[in-house]
View 1 (cartoon, helix red, strand yellow):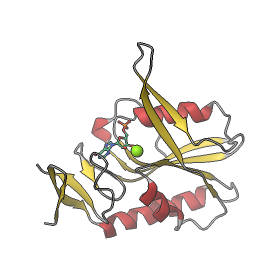
View 2 (cartoon, helix red, strand yellow):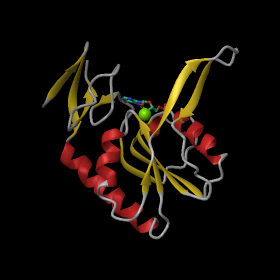
View 3 (tube, helix red, strand yellow):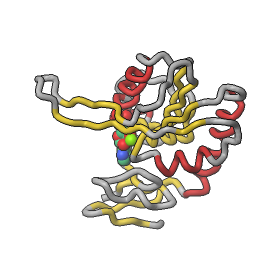
Length: 178
Ligand code: IMP
Ligand code: MG
């Protein structure tokens, strides 16, 4: 079993690249069918989805646009605690078919917040496309139109996903072992 050291933690391969690529092509085909003539606007969420977005979009041959967004987290001055602001939303999304491209959905709170923020700008539709979903970790209901793979509630790195900023630059996905 191929292993990987990221900082103080050890990981082992859990999803080989080829397996993931097969599912990415399947999802790309679904999106291609659904979005015929709709000129969708893909909004990948940085940083985690940069590799997934690059691979997914190269499998989608229809006319589309791509605009990256990011969630900035900072401590608010109010007692409400953490404030999460969507940054990079420079494009007018009114009347557009928006597809949010995410690396992984865990509790679903990030995605719920993202959908909420984008919805206020009256897009024609919003669909979520997540490379991975941890169904057992979901705390809120999120409509997930496209998903490559469902995974157990374990911590993973690779293919864009990080542990403390490191480990994004691998071809396979690894699961924490110790
Ligand atoms: P959520 O708001 O709990 O759904 O968290 C989603 C975000 O947490 C993702 O966009 C990732 O950046 C990060 N995340 C969740 N699970 C993992 C993991 O197993 N490895 C690395 N990052 C993760
Ligand atoms: Mg993310």
